[in-house]
Image (cartoon, rainbow, N blue to C red):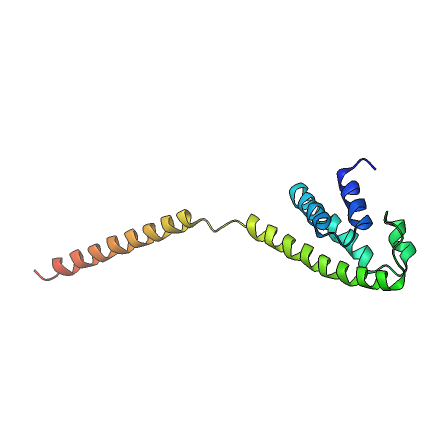
Amino acid sequence: MSDPLDVLWAHVLDTWDDDKRHQAFLAYCVDHGTLAEAAARYRKVAEASSEADVVSMGGVHGSGYRDLASRRDDAKKRLAAVALVAMSALDNQRTQPNTSRMMFGFKVFAGLFLLASLLALAWAFSGME
């Protein structure tokens, strides 16, 4: 288990109530683009049907059903937080529309309109004589 992600996750499972462990795990996932893996791991805890399921994920035995129920509820909240972080990351990566190209099109249109207006005025004045 030399993968840093696995090591961090094992620390999360071993000391579930330690927010700093969760923050370190999530920060690593953000930095390495593995938020989907973080969500999958929290989802497994949220859907765990027994303490044995959590132990099979690399955790240690807790204090029974009450611990499992609170861990599942907490995992659901943390899964929502992972989704929020992922949405924020996507929002930060979103590109803005190319306004310089739009401005160029507007200037060309305005120039052509001005030229057509001047030609129309010149034609109107030439017909007055």
